[in-house]
Image (cartoon, rainbow, N blue to C red):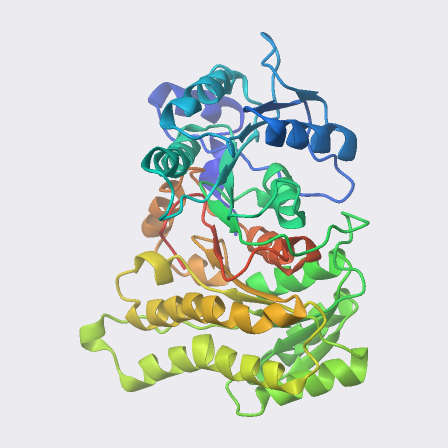
Length: 447
């Protein structure tokens, strides 16, 4: 769906008029294209100690980025990385943060700011906990100040996780890249040193077989396409009534189609049977299928409540149970479920939907330990306002307000959700366990 307002305020006479009137001027976001460089310009790495040196070395020698360790007076940086893992007192934040501040006016359009810090633990000394928790507030506030399509995100390392652990490196690359265009103001915790870095960053899912439910259209179609682009063989699943569209998507991504109602008791068994018979394995399951039946709770009917819970959470639980009991879902498996910002913050008229999506968040948190023995993970992606057929049915004025409320002042695209799913499905995310990553432009509004 086209955002006409965004296009108008970024072209010709209307752009000048919007500036004179002080109207919001959302910047077109740069999204990933195969073969593009990680960064279109130099990166500034700030922070004390060996961890900052290690990050600078990774960027310069591993990813061929022009890295500066001290801000140059006239440099226009594509990214600023604040490595704050070794701060022990809130006053330790001053030097690196204020050095970064001096560069922000010259941050390139679509630039990136990424913090790397450590978890504030209950048994930390008060000053240490204050310093570490302070990074959370710093990052979220800074992300709201950035303009020109720039984003700010953070990586948080649990105790015992080194800065060069695969999932720290993978998260850093994701946040620096254009794959994370609509991910803003988020802090992603890396819980362990598990995972592996791909030999080919363009095809990190090569050799993997992924199942995507609700794949015939919208976000599901984008997920199937993105996983296939990244090297996966994709099983596209949707209801029989979407059979023609499903076949088109499956053919385009060179995968296979499975017409299936995910709420049936044997849905998990049929998914396993299809994947094993056609592709010999199953490695990734993306639970994307979902519905809405919005009503104020006072007007809610049993049919509307029960149908949403059946599709959005009960089906996922049943399919996961079949996978875990099969003995075939053991090759560093990945479960990625679609939650929603409604399941985190709530949304008027969506008690059923929010309950189901909040349930998804609880489910992945509890499922992740069950996959640990196989090197597996379960995580969730929580979209905000995404431009889909569903949001196109929202009244025009409400739709415009929802677009402008986030820090990037626009709606996301289905591919933004798909890129985040692809990262969490990759071997490089093996240390990200039971987490929720929002794709919302730093807002809590929308589906």
